[in-house]
Amino acid sequence: MSGNITLTMIKPDAVRNNHIGGILKMINEAGFRIVAMKYTKLSSEKAGEFYAVHKERPFYGELVEFMSSGPIVAAILEKKNAVEDFRTLIGATNPANAADGTIRKMYATSLGENAVHGSDSDENANLESDFHFSKVERF
Ligand code: ATP
Ligand code: MG
Image: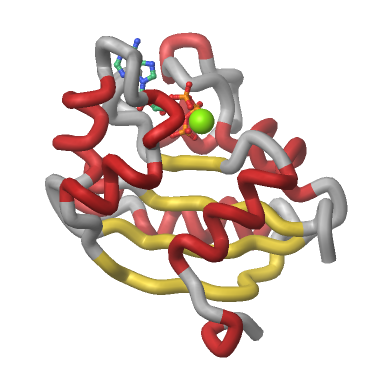
């Protein structure tokens, strides 16, 4: 299954703005299969752990505060070439630079509040999937 999964989170801004349905529709229409999914909320400790790679960056505190500011939807998605294809579907980190037809172009509000997360490598897809889901939560 390696190479065929990615981990996404529908971030607190998109949940607050009632975009869960719209985003899941785009994910399904792009050919991703949902392996696991949950509606949950990250504590600031867990959000900090998830984004620990950015610990030294100036926006880390803001990122952790935002990601723990409300509920999220976490999901494991399966598709051939999942990581790269999902990054294409979500668009650039800054929605101002996101291509037409991408999730961030449609639903993100700013660089900090950019609607969705997508794993950046197969290794991180597996680590991030294990962060959110046990084996028995995957179908
Ligand atoms: P994500 O990991 O959430 O999918 P990404 O891989 O496109 O996003 P990263 O470089 O991993 O981008 O940054 C993680 C998140 O940190 C971004 O999605 C964004 O919300 C936030 N972020 C990145 N750069 C900045 C910045 N300069 N100012 C504020 N927030 C930022
Ligand atoms: Mg990233």
